[in-house]
Image (cartoon, rainbow, N blue to C red; front, top):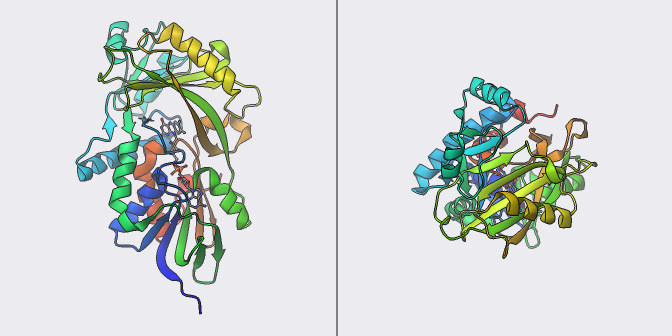
Length: 364
Ligand SMILES: Cc1cc2nc3c(=O)[nH]c(=O)nc-3n(C[C@H](O)[C@H](O)[C@H](O)COP(=O)(O)OP(=O)(O)OC[C@H]3O[C@@H](n4cnc5c(N)ncnc54)[C@H](O)[C@@H]3O)c2cc1C
């Protein structure tokens, strides 16, 4: 006779999203296990920092980011830790005045910053000659610290080094197969990052998610720039070197600053040739970021998932999130999720506890 461990909810994937959902469920007293193939936070959620911002085009995403901001406040209060450096973030776009007015109309706190203020808020970079918008309530997330806290608060509800190998729908439950055990769960949520479509395919479900890889470089800060709070930036206005946009943010560990760029490659699949990306990033840093040491940089190859929707541009520009529901299993797909984690935890937990798929996650 086979014995199964009974659980209410199984979460597949221990990235920031899976950990957040599992924590919400655990606090509601639900029996939940979060299965993680490697160590929690070692997938796309790895690394020191992420940009927290709300300046999205889609009002639903903006709403989600604002909901998440309150969630981060709550997490910080519960943990007694600072997860966000609330320094603000710079945005540089071609139609700056129109964008500022649009964001202000959405009730975001935004304003233009002078060259002098740019030197104070982002001392490692030469001031822009173009107008710079400051999103005042944006900031930089301490990614590692937040993962570590979620992980410790989950305790035995997180099973690391336990890949889920198969999901089988039965009349009243789903069988969750790992290498050494089979669990019987009432519902399953798959938040396995780039592996989500693979798990979907094994159940005959098509999850419309793609991924791309790009390289970003981590530069040591020169002495005099260390331990100084700094804003992040997203520059969508400088298209030299075949670049679509450039971003930079303090790595918040090891006195490093990360610079990445998205090449405007013609096939629109994201990423670009790694050697060219490194070359362009170095040229850009040498020209515009004198506060960074160009010797001794580190390369970070990053995976970014997004929904596939080739009709409206490159995957990294995607602003949609989607849940594909098959019986008692929900597959969550999308990208640029870190900032949304507390809000996603709450919404996806409500969904797996018997709610409908929230309207903003339903397929178009
Ligand atoms: C370099 C970089 C910069 C980014 N910048 C930002 C930013 O500034 N702001 C922002 O909001 N977002 C940003 N993002 C995106 C954000 O980090 C990701 O969207 C987010 O971390 C994804 O979290 P996740 O939990 O969905 O996936 P992941 O972190 O990838 O977690 C999925 C987990 O599932 C596990 N897994 C896979 N298959 C199985 C299986 N069969 N069984 C069990 N476990 C499995 C994996 O091991 C992995 O740990 C950035 C991403 C990168 C890479």
